[in-house]
Length: 208
Image 1 (cartoon, rainbow, N blue to C red):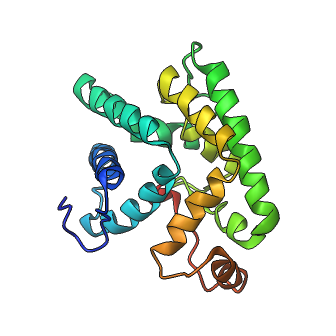
Image 2: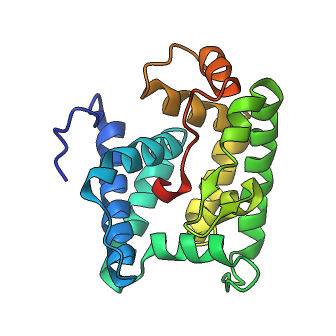
């Protein structure tokens, strides 16, 4: 994909790292779709970028760098982290989480859930829109979605993510603030009004 596309943010080094991450994830996503016999629409990259950029924008810079390294390693060893994410969303009960990271996944998930609940207390309509996460076979709960972002990470990244959320209780709020900024929303308060009136399209897990 071209980094010069108008929706791609390129203000600083962090944006460059996030672009690299999203591009690697998009390659994995399109490979997953091709393997399923349902090729991804190239025009879907913009929505994919917006959601994934927002998701990663709340990470500390060292976490971003480590996650990018893990994605590169996964690509070279034949792992598709996006496929693993969707496999978990479709069947969390049967997904085999590495026993060595289970406790770290839970630690990071608890911190993320607390941040989400804090956000939902102030922005219930936006938080509810975030529940409409499409696993391509139906909706998934926020608990499942949070863990789908964690079950395929390395222990180092999980530790860093848990730290990032502990240091920033508004971690989830920052994700949403970044996401709505792609749609010229001046503030979360404005976006909340639009979400409450159902004029904002909810985030889609199909591009998350």
